[in-house]
Length: 223
Image (cartoon, rainbow, N blue to C red; front, top):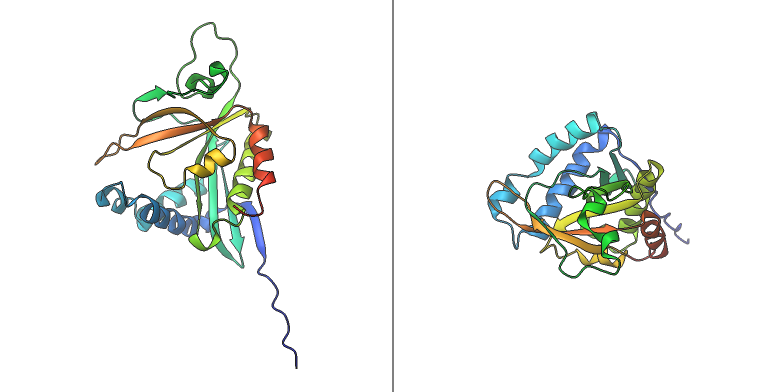
C-alpha cells in the first residue's frame, strides 16, 4: 500500500492581533539572544527577555497606535516571523550623516527621512515611515518569508501615504546585509542610549518605497 503524500503545512501572512503577542515575544527575545550576544552585554539582553517582551507586545497589540502595523507569518498555527513599522520615531542618541552618501545626497540625507529636522526653506518633505523590527525563527530563515513580510508591511505603509522608508539596526547585526540586498542605502549612523551600553546603529533608507516593494517581490523565493 502506497502511503499518502503529506500535504505541506498551511502558511499565512496576515496582520497580527492580540493573541499573537506571546508568540511574537518569543521570537523577538530569541532573536536578541541569537544575533546580539556577541556584542551586547548579557545584562542588556537579559533585561529584554521573553517575559519583558511578552508584556511589551501585549501592550502594543492591545492598542496599536494609528499608522502602526505588525504582520506575522503563521505556519500550521505557529507564528514563525514578524515585522512591525509605522511613523518615524525619535532616535534616542546622537546621529551622524552617512560618510559615503549615494548619488543625489539630498535624496538620501537623514532629514529627508524625518530622522533630523529639515533645513528651513527646503520645501515640502516626502512622507517617511519606519520599519521597527523584522525577525524570523531560525528554521524559517532564507525561505523568502522575510522579504514577504517586509513587502506586506511596506505596501501597507505606502497605502497610508509613505513615500520613503527607513530602518535602524545595530551596526554589528550579523544579518544586516539583508537590508542592502533589498535595496537599502546607508543614510546615517548613530548610537542608541541604553541603560547599560551605547551600541552603534546604522540607518538604511529607501528613497522610493515602491522600489523596496518591487525588490522584495523579486527575491521572495529564497531569502
